[in-house]
Amino acid sequence: MLQRWSSDKLISNLHRVVMPMGEDATKSRYSMAFFLQPDDSTVIESEKYETVTALQMIQGRVRAYWPTADKE
View 1 (cartoon, helix red, strand yellow):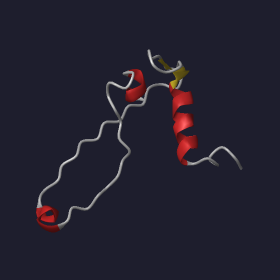
View 2 (view 1 turned 135 degrees about the horizontal axis):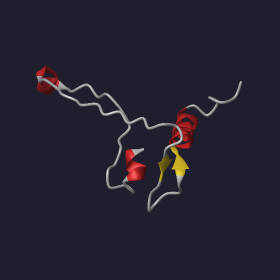
View 3 (view 1 turned 180 degrees about the horizontal axis):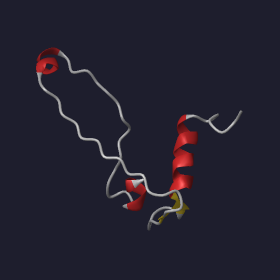
């Protein structure tokens, strides 16, 4: 969502966990999570993408990962 709002100035990554190998496996690792959840009716406007609401954006992401999510 932040990527869309920023017209790709802030790029989002897909979450993945990769176990380090060798000596790197013993080093401490740090991460920081940031969650953004506006109200469903919040309008997301961008110079690069079509205008959508936060709900439409979230529903699109859910359908991309689980195509049958809205089918029973």
